[in-house]
Image (cartoon, rainbow, N blue to C red; front, side):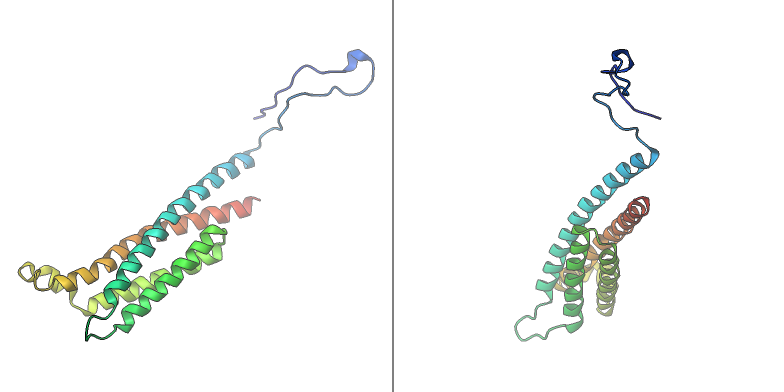
Amino acid sequence: MCYCYTKPAVGGSGSGSGRPALRENWRPARTAASGFSTRYTKKVEDGKSRLSTLILSQAAVQLFSLLNFLPKKGGSLDRVAVSFTVLAFVSILVGELGRRYNRVSLLMCYLAASNLAIMISLGSAGRTNLIEVIGDTSQWKKNMLQLLTNVPILLGSLLQTLSSGTTITLTAYMYSLKRAS
C-alpha cells in the first residue's frame, strides 16, 4: 500500500526545461515494517508506564514491610525478613533503572532478584504457620499482629505476579523492536 500524496507537477515537461517535475507536499510510502515499529513502540510505552506503577507500588509495600520487621521493645531483628526486604529494594532500583533506560538486561535482573525476594519472604511466612493462624478464626484477635505482619508479604506476592507478567511482555516487545531496527 502506498500513501503518496502529490500535487500537479511544477516546472514539468510543459515548461521545456527538461528537468523532472518537482513534487510539493509529499510523504514517503509507508512500509509494513514502519507500521510494526509504530505499534510495538506504543506497546513498549504502555508497558513501561504500567511497570512504573507496579514498581512504585512494590516500593510502598516493601517500605511497609520493613516497618513491620523492625524490632519492638526488647525484641530481636529478624535477619531473614530484613535481608529479603533489602534484596527487594535493590531489585526495585534495578528494575526502575532498566525501565527508565530501556535496558532489557537490567529488567531481567530485576525479574530474577524480585522473584527470589518473594520466594524468601513466602518461605519466611511459611515458618510462622500462617495457614493455621488464618484457618482458626477464633484466634484472630489474639494473633492479629502475626496476621498484619504477613499482609505485605501476600500483597507483595500479588504485585510480583503482575510485575513479572508485565516485565516479560515488555522485554519481548523490546527484543522485537531491536530485531526490527
